[in-house]
Length: 261
Image (cartoon, rainbow, N blue to C red; front, side):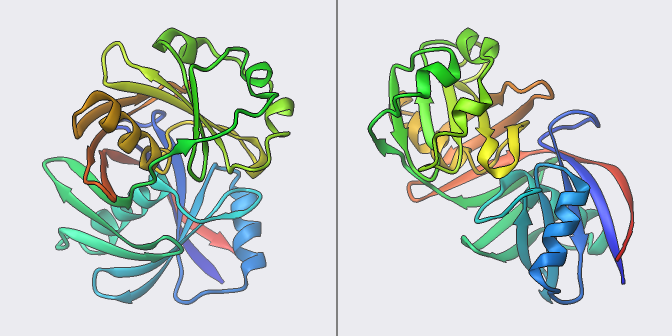
């Protein structure tokens, strides 16, 4: 079997920036073991698998090198980029059937805009090991799917050097988001998911399902500009819509080819 394969740098206008995702085009769903093996072999934070359902509508699943996940922003953005650029350039939007429901991506003015579920975090008990693992004491800790640790300023986020073995001991959340007010943006963040096989994710769309409603409420504004401060870095333009969020960014092709399996 030959599977068309694309590697896309999402949330970046240039290669070697943003977050790389693999996008694999399938005719139908194979066994889950094959999907997981391909994702492990790709060894990117996420591999997206697409199956066409109708014009402008696809089934979409996401796998890290270790597990299947319920939501992934940058690999959704990458999937839409592949469809718009290589499958059907006449489309202005595309719909994806996913484990998180129907997700839509539209293209306009050089940006791809994702319509995702909002995940407002709630106050939670702070894990005793969190400050040791992050090397800094958060001013606030909340939780949705992920644990959200809020800090005083951007420099703490930028200089953070987590102890990933200690972070792995936090098992009641998928990942740990750290965030603070930004110097040149409304807020900044980083995203750590060592128990999912991802020490640090470069740019994380799904994290902004939690970040956007939190910062919209705190800053009393719905249109937000964000940076993710990983080594590769990424820029996101976001809008809070209550129970939904819009997350916009660019994407570029890094590589394409075929997988033989």
